[in-house]
Length: 450
Picture 1: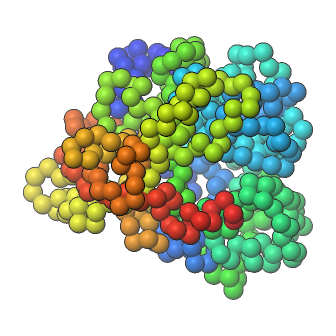
Picture 2: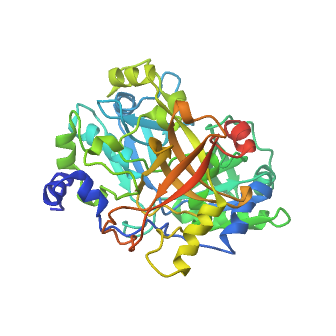
C-alpha cells in the first residue's frame, strides 16, 4: 500500500515540515521545452497564433453516473442551475471552513458524463467525496504523463492568438460558429470530429481542441498545415508554463486539506505522493496560515450561493469580509538584476531566479511587505516577454492593492529547505509595484470576451 498523506505527516512531524522539505523534483511539463526559444514563443500568442500541446501535463477525471451532477454541485461553489451539455466552467471547491481546495476546468460532455481537467488537488477532493458519499457515480482517472504508463486517453491542443480564428477557419474549411466564452462546439478537421472549448489565454482569442489520442497527430498535422501563411508558432512547455502570468490565473495555491472538518479521513485516503511541495519566504508552523479564500485570487465571480455545498456557510462569512484581492506585482528591474548578479560574485548568492518561470515548489508562497509589515503573499513569479517585465501574482490586503503602491517581495528561504530545487542561498528583498491583474491591458479588457 502506498503511504497515505496522514502517515507522511506523522512521519515528518507536521504538514509544514513535510511540504517544506518534500523530495519531489521540480514540476516539468513532459513536452518539448522549446521549439525555437521561449521568448519568441511567448510573443506568438500576442502577435500571430500559437499551437500548444496540453495533452501530457494535466489530469483528467471522468465522472459518470446519475448522481454525477449532484456530486459536483454538492462539492463545488459554482452555480449549476443552467449548466448544460457542451458547456464548460472553471470549477472551484473549498473546505468546510471556506478555504480554497483548488480549481479545474469542468467539461459537460454528455448526459451524466463530465470531464474534470487540471491539477489533481480539486480532482482528488471530488473523487473522495464521490467514493465516500451516497452517490451513484463512477470515476476514471487519466493521470498526467509524468506518472501514467502509456499514452493519454485524449489529445488536447491549444490555439491562441489574433490569428487563431483565421487558422480554425482554414483548418476546418468553414466559418467558425459564434460560441460564447467557455462554450463548446464541434469542428471537422481532416475528416475527424474535434471537440472544442472557446476561451482565451493572455486575453487573446483561443480554442482548446480535444479528441481520442489516436487521432491527435493527424489533427496536429492539419493545424500545422493550415498555419502556413498565418505565422503559426509551435510553443513548448517553458513558454506555456508562463502563460498564466498574463491571464493572471494562480495555478497551484496550497490546498486547504491539512486541517479542518472532515479532512482527517481525507488525508488517510489521499496518497502522500500527491501532497506537493511548499516553497517561498512565508513561514509559519500553522499550516492554516497558508490557506487562501477564493476571493483572495479573484474567484468571487464564480461563487454562487444558490445551492448548498461544502463550506457554504463559512464562505458566506468570507464573502462579507474580503480582506485581500488579487494583483500583479511588477518587480523592480534593478533588484532582479542584483539578485541574478549575486550568482557571479563571491559569497552566498540570492535564490536562483529561473526564467521564464521562477517558482521552485508546487506551492509558492512569498512574503509581501510594506514598510516592514506583512501585507499579503506572492504566488507564481516569472517573466513576460510581451511586457518586458518580471512579475508575480499576489494576494494583497485591500488597503495596499491600489495600482502604483510600492511593496517588497522577500525572495528566498530562511532557513533553506531540503527540497531538491533549493541550493544554499540568502534571502533578498525585491521592490515591486502593485498593478492590476491581468497586467496586460488587452488581457484585462478582452479575456472573457475572446
